[in-house]
Image 1: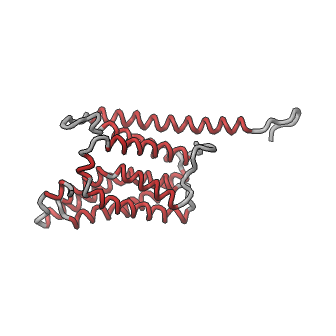
Image 2: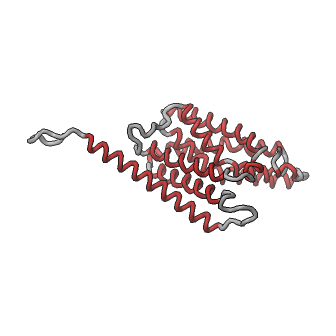
Image 3: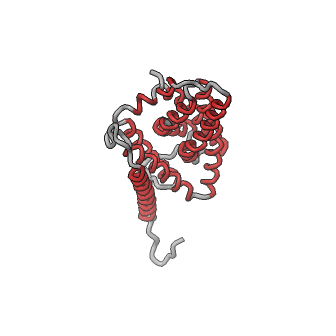
Length: 251
């Protein structure tokens, strides 16, 4: 099964090739942000030296999977519940990463990705669910040219690596970015869920404002759950503190 876009005529002039390349570059720049947020959050708990290794491994493996997904993307999007399941996974990952990166988890509530391979696994799960639209956009812009398609998918590696590395450093300095990133992922997950065929059976046209509104609500839910988990953990820690003997001031 080949992607539907591969049936289009390949660029047959220099101007068409240049236009296709420019389109692919812009698509990668615009759509690399969500994946960069996932990777930055996934590797944030790693040591500084391991972060770059995790980013390279996660990004490289994700691109290999994108090449495979390219040949099935059109068929996947035509299946029921694919976006519903994918959106649910992204929503869950947003809450998990927020919990892991803000101290929102406690004993028995899971641990952050403290090894390279656990971070890479989390990156792959998120990228598989979030990259279908990116694959379709790049495939459409390549107009059936396998070379342009590989160029577009390959270009996403340095873009995501650079952006992820920068974001992970900024998150260390400005923790608010962690909350913004998790909210963004929640928005992406909510929008994926509401655009599934279960809610929008073909040929129904999606309402942009409705989809955006659902995404904003989903982002708010992620942040609210994150705040609740952090409050719960702090309350549990405060209750676990041993009482001070009478007459002795607390340390």
